[in-house]
Length: 82
Image (cartoon, rainbow, N blue to C red):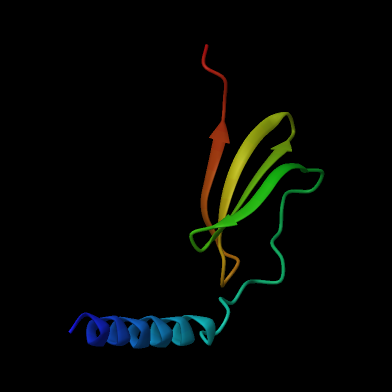
């Protein structure tokens, strides 16, 4: 009985692996725009969003773009606490 159960588990793992391996890659926009003269501090892709931290005119921004369309979803101004 244990060997039969182990065999079914192996088949299940193989099917899940096969489906995950053959899934199409996530579409990503070719580029995004930043204000002229902006200095990029960091950039990363996470959870379907492109996160870019940049310095523009002495103000630090964190801008989130949709990964597939390139549209701005959030623009946060980062400031020091007084």
